[in-house]
Length: 411
Image 1 (cartoon, rainbow, N blue to C red):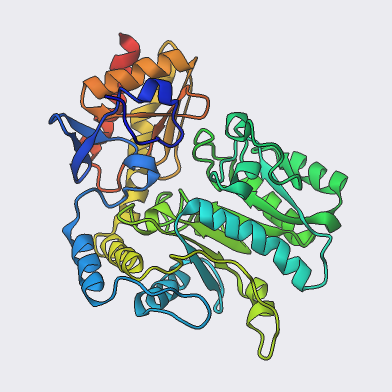
Image 2 (image 1 turned 180 degrees about the horizontal axis):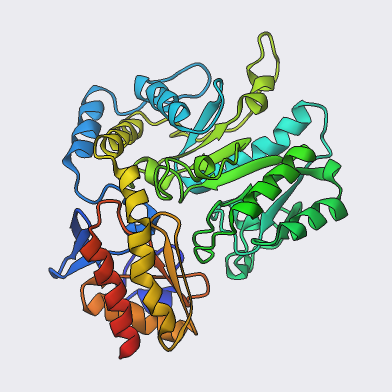
């Protein structure tokens, strides 16, 4: 029987009678309704960092819900978990004292917030002409209105028209091209540069420390807000709490989501540097940022995030990612020699990708994994296999992922 559920990012003609129903999870593993056990090689959509089935998260959420599930945070209202989480994030994030946090329901919300605030900031400070946002080739910034426009993948923009015409794209790896784009456009017209420190859905592409440093300096020089999109890389994925810390980016704004709760409940947000927040927080000021969503700072969700951060700290999982970085890179490296492989990318935390010659081959690799107990996922144009396991994965399980891909290519 055809499903009533309209799956996101899916071609429903092929999915509607072919669903795989995930029934439960424990640690790095998932089980389908028919009892098939699968190693989660991607931490779902990059987020199951502490693993599945952690009772301490469920306990924290239940305790908060028994007290208060949520109360809206518009105007002057707040709940204690909301305030505690924002303070906790500011303590962890690479920002000066006085940074602020805006909360939403996920990464796409965070990007929407950042795009609007970048333009609102320059209007508030007397420079309303600074409205253009520069994104990058291969970039992915979610699928809300601004995120769709900022994203690179043409298929994600097809059929919608120009949702945001004031968006330009520059090279993901050549900082000279970014400089050329800025100068040809006019720095006085550019509000922000959006940058994933490691591009995720676009193919797991690390542009290099030089690119990040040079582009950051260009933004500083021309008074362009540098927005670090850490929806994927935040909360430990690169071996530091944030990639902005690892690469000393000193962002003006930083988005986060996924890893903040390890997917136990939906949450995303934006950390805002003091100088960007200041016009809106000034004593006796009259400016406001008219933006927010119903579940901003949801009390039970914030309780889940606080419990998740406790686990990350107590079990030293961010440091564990750093120690597994070379393990993942070494396990994947031999795949580069196999027929059908165009490139293997790894070496920054628990992020890896195997680029194959075409989507048909990637489909076969994914199917082979599913039939041999490893849950893999195709990204970009369907020819790149994503590898981003939970932080609790073992070295043997990392090798199993690599061996499964090798066996699939061998077939």
